[in-house]
Image 1 (cartoon, rainbow, N blue to C red):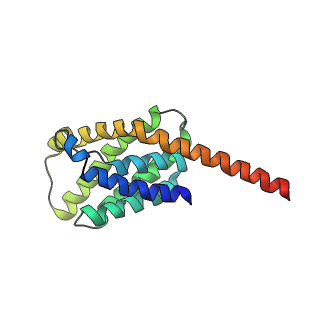
Image 2: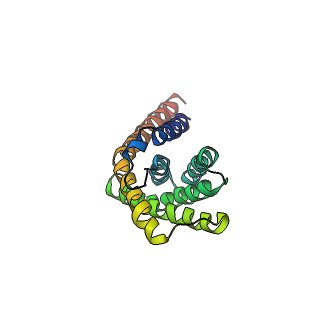
Image 3: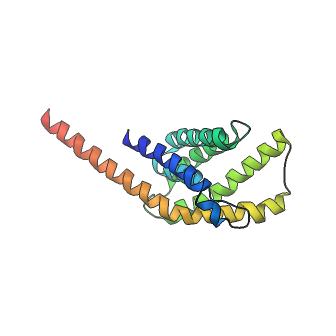
Length: 176
């Protein structure tokens, strides 16, 4: 329960930071997507089912606040959370390299999914080459840097939660 409260607080804090502080550090025309880093990190740690749910919630929140079309961010982040959970089953969660590279690839995937959805359903689209070089890659690099800070925090929290759950389980077993 406390994990979901922490995630919700992280969502709100990330949206506040994106709209205020990070707007001063714009690289080219790209802003970092802290919600995406949180979704990929938690999906990688918690698995595909929880990653998809967290991605859906984060995307819906982002759709409600920033988007005129409901569902684009929700779909992209849900798929990303699910995919990160699938990959997290196969890789070592203790090492930082895998989730950081996953954030890079996930950001590019997220942006291409959004590009496709917007160009198909809204009809507005910038040239792919320009979007890739001026938006997608700088955003992916920003997100990688943020993942170096965000992923270890969530990983340590999940490890402590597991240790606490194990010690509580042992106490319950000893009482019976």
